[in-house]
Amino acid sequence: MAGYVLAIDQGTTSTRAIVFDGEMKIAGIGQKEFTQIFPKSGWVEHDPEEIWETVLWAVRQALKEARVEARDIAALGITNQRETVVVWERETGRPIHNAIVWQDRRTASYCEKLKRQDLEKFFTRRTGLLLDPYFSGTKLSWMLANVKGARARAAKGELCFGTIDTFLIWRLTGGRSFVTDATNASRTLIYNIAENRWDEDLLEILRIPAAMLPEVKDCAADFGITDESLFGAAIPILGVAGDQQAATIGQACFEPGMLKSTYGTGCFAVLNTGADLVRSKNRLLTTIAYRLDGETTYALEGSIFIAGATVQWLRDGLGIIERASETGDLAEDADPLQDIYLVPAFTGLGAPYWDAEARGAIFGLTRATGPAELARAALEAVCYQTRDLLDAMQKDWRNSGGDTVLRVDGGMVASDWTMQRLADLLDAPVDRPTILETTALGAAWLAGSRAGVWPDRKAFAKSWARERRFEPKMDEKARSAKIRGWKDAVRRTLTAV
Image (cartoon, rainbow, N blue to C red):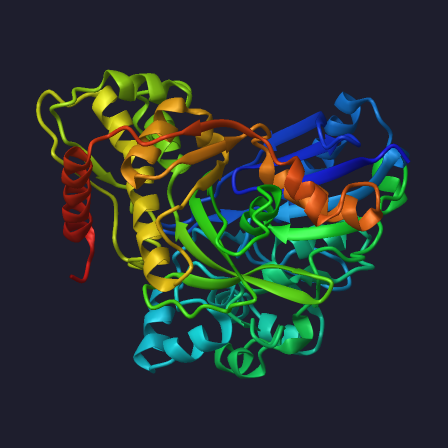
């Protein structure tokens, strides 16, 4: 076996498949976007069948570009948009409803009801999460309540629940494997992260039948074998992790204290805390970073709902840019005397604010404000939000201190301007790796190492390579003034002060 490994990276707006060779270099890529469905304000859905079709297309395209056959692939790893909910019929595999996406806010009032019943601390203690529409549990409960007969059918074992990984594994294996991994399970609001099991008490509160839940495995495990008819040969599925945990692995953040941040549709900062299950006092999330060989490694995570999606809004909503890559040059040309703040609460604010009802706002507009100033404000918003997350992490964890180096990945990190501004506002170095596809690489490493064709954890960590380090250059007075302006803008945006 030549050591080829295939990764499926099923994201929020597109599906990618990447073939890596035995030296962990990219040999072929297939990528396809799919439809974003917005039935009502604050609601976001995907068509699971369309996602499935993009997966098949992307895998076949990646194999074609790499000039390899499915029989040449030693293992398949899967990483996915987390928290997105799919429910399908066990007998036919047909979804009973569109997938409800992690960005969807339809269960905000239900979450508030549970909070009024004084249940948030109970949920947080068991899951490390907060009562927010972001997570899978209340979305699943909504689907069971609003699709005719769904809850009764689920109790009879006729329906299956899964995050995207579970749905894809089911389809890839022809319904033979009904499984997930510990990282995806840890984002559902119904998984006990200390005991590594589905939590019966939380299932009862949300009225979710246990019969519809998948088996939970380590991140590197035997998840099944793909149906030979799909790609021409059977491929073992040996690695699975939610996208942010896969990026953490791909960035080789295996030691406690290591920190990565991914800039895609949203932004997600993850701090490895090792075996230490840290209970956040600053409204961060405690989550499972990965589970290997039965041993659980935990993390603190800060979630920003809107990052690259703000740039998409500039392109698709306002029409002031044609390509996302234009924003860095525009920001460079922005008037330095205009302090424009964009708080991108299009679907609420995530950590550390957790205001589901907040909506986006722009402050500081003048008659002279134009596309360049808006582009700069959009990029800076991501940097300010990252600063908020790192401040909270340093308050929460005793071992997180002043020598922070942030490893970054995701589409936005290709912008030198954005990464320099990030280093400036964090007052910390920012490291960009040579391989930016770290999410897919993390999933591929889980599978490749399990198959024995890729290096072990220690050797993989040594292979991580930095393409560029961005050092902070902004003086403290300017930095402090900009951060004060940002905090004031957020304060004005929050629905409850």
